Every structure is written in structure tokens, then in C-alpha cells.
Length: 424
Image (cartoon, one colour):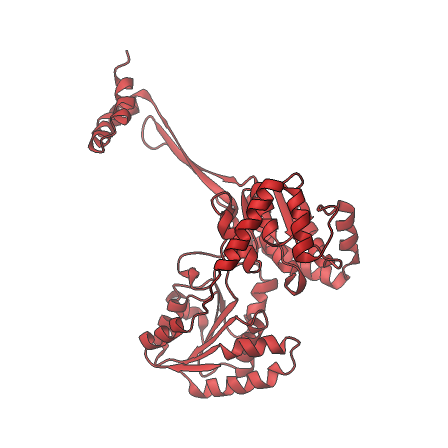
């Protein structure tokens, strides 16, 4: 891992200069062609594109209830038990996020308020291959169901060995339909619909660069959750932190992706040295050693000049996952302005958030925690305002409405109010 030191401005400038950059224009053109093909040719395009990109001859897209039940029964009981624990914790946490509307009738003759209603349908994209995670099914589907979404549709790439745990998690989370289709063509199908796959109101879930690009291109036709980048972890640690814990938690994110962003921020040089040694010891035992090695090469040890600087640097980075492995970590919580998910104390390791604790693990990356939030129930609802005015209430405020309308040159607006005052 690279070592950075200096004042806050110097460190943040160096981090920005090291940002991952890549030209995605060719990918965008390919994705736009795929979307156009699916819009025009529907299922026929899905069959052709799946043969071209996945090497699979599809005769049907939908996974039957019998296939889902069989997959559920084939999953080892200990994994079902773990998924059930996760399902309960995720459900309980998101149940507390539910919001109701309000009704305000304090002003005589006026009723106003807000309704909160669920989206009608949601599509969940679940990657295939090594990124096929049943925990992501739970994290995406459960808050949608808590919000009251009636139809949750899941798509996942076709595979001769489709992970049965994915289908088991879908059954546990209440997913209504599952289709074996992947890539940009799956996103296009969810956005515009085909003869077989229904269109939805919003698409959520992670995917590769083609999936992320397709989500960006169909936004506006449908809603999307976020455009996620590589996984991130930033650990704030004091001189009392355990280097072995720090190394283990850094590696837990490094194994996701060679482009994962791995950062330790501290005021202790000796802690950085000890953590570096612990990383070297632990990495040799990992199945994804090669991925971790590349990720760590691009990671950062940041030696801050003060504790205050540690928090300034953190808020500038706005990490996806933030661990505070410092004495009395709760005392530092008010200093965090920008972070997706915060883990307090040496026993609150980040994988708890990935699997079991309950908060959502779909979290903003690449600094977007400065203005966005983890996936939650609010992402699957919408708000509508409403008003009801009596004749007397309209008369009381008509002059102000007419004045404002004339000030903006909107005489039809003014007339719509004036005509009601002229009635007998």
C-alpha cells in the first residue's frame, strides 16, 4: 500500500490525482445498441444476445416455482439457517425505516398533506459467476417488500450451474418472478419490457460495467438505485488498535475487486508498520490472494498530522464503508459527515454489515456518500402531496395567488383563481 502524509489539502489532492480513470465510450455505444435491439425485437433479441455474450441457447427465461423450490431444498441447512438470520435482521431494521404521510388541517377551510405509496414494481439485477451473492438478493428485495412493492422481479445471468442459494434467497425474500437473463440486455428488458419479461418502475442491484452503463442509459424511463463503483473501506485507527484486526478488515474488501479502494488513516506510524506486516502475513492464506495483492498495491496508508485531520480527510473521501477502531468510538460519531455505513469499535467488523447486522449493504461509493444514502425503504416509495380548499379559504388567499401569477406573467394562472371569485 502507498503511504501518504502531510496536511489535509496535500493528502486529498494526491488522492484525487490517483483516481481510477478509464474511457468507457466504446462500452456506451455497445450498450446503446443492445438497448435499441431489445426495445425493437423483444425476446428474440434476448435469445440472440444471450447466445452471443453468454454462449447459452435459451428456450425459456422464467424460472419455475418448482425449480426454485428444488433449489431451496438443495441448499445446506446451515446456509439456510444463516440466510434466515440475515433475512430477519434485515427485515427488522428496514421495518423501522417505514414512513407514513401526514394530514394537516390546522388552517380553517384547508386540508393539506402527503401520501407515501410504494412503487408498483421493481427489478433486481443479481450478477452471476463469482459475484453471485445471495446476501445481495436479501438486501435488495427485502426493503422493497417492506415498502409494499407488489411485484419484485429478479434477473440473473443464465448458467448451467445457477447458484441454488440465489434462488433460495429469492424465495425467502418474497421475490415474485425470476428470469435467467443477464447483462445490458436484462436491464433493457426490465426498463422497456418484452413478450416475457415485464417492465418495472425501478431497477436496483449491482453489476459489471455493461450493467452499470445500461442502468445509466435507461434512467428516466425507470428509476435506478445508484451507479456503484468499486468497493471501498476506510479505517480510522488510533495507536491502541489491533493491527491484525485492521489487516483482516482491509483484506475483506480487497478481495472483492482489484480496483477496490483500501485505506487506513491514523496518526501512528508504528501502527501503519505493524498493519503492513499483518497484511503480508494474512494475504498468503487467502483464496483470492491475487486480487487482494493488486487492490493493496493501489491502497493507501495515510499518516495524518492530528485526529482532527483524520476526520477531515475521511469526510472528504466519503467512503462506502467506514470503520472507527478508536477508543470510545461513539464519541467520534458526530464528527462523521460523509460515509455510507459506519462501523464502531474493534468488534464491529465490516462483514457484519455485509451479511447479518441488518443495515443495507448497497451503499454509495466513489464519494457519492456526500449526497446519497444506502439503499432503504424510501428508495421503493414515492410521495404525493394533496390539498383541499373550501371557497372561503380560496377567497382568503386569492389576492396573493393572483399577485404572484401576474408577477411571473402567467395570466392564465391568475384567471383560474379570479374566475372562481366571480361566481355567484
